[in-house]
Length: 164
Image (tube, rainbow, N blue to C red):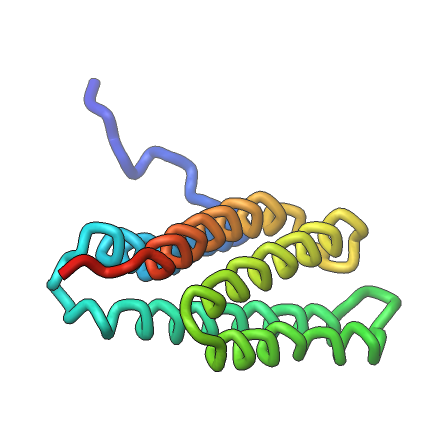
């Protein structure tokens, strides 16, 4: 007998969605992790003054994206569609904008705190049934931890005096 790869049952659409979300989400951590690594090691693949700005910009965009997820969830909240939840969904974008205006390392501290708050808010909404995608909670938790740790490392490294 030979193993026929095509003999495996096809994944359901739901399984494909979860798998895609994990792959894309983890890929989305790459700029955080690589940026932190480049800053800590002093890598000059990209000129060092540009790396913190690139990570800060990316972090602000992703935080805004997470607010957009909450906007969409608020529009589709089963039986609740609250204008308050809709209004709260713009807070991540505003927080990202404020963080982008702060000097380093506070910009990274602010982003890390905002990502942590957003992660807690998302997981709480999932557990309360306001977001009806239960597999999203472990994904959000993993991605939040990865982003927050990377931003904390960058905040710490950018607060250190530069040796010449």
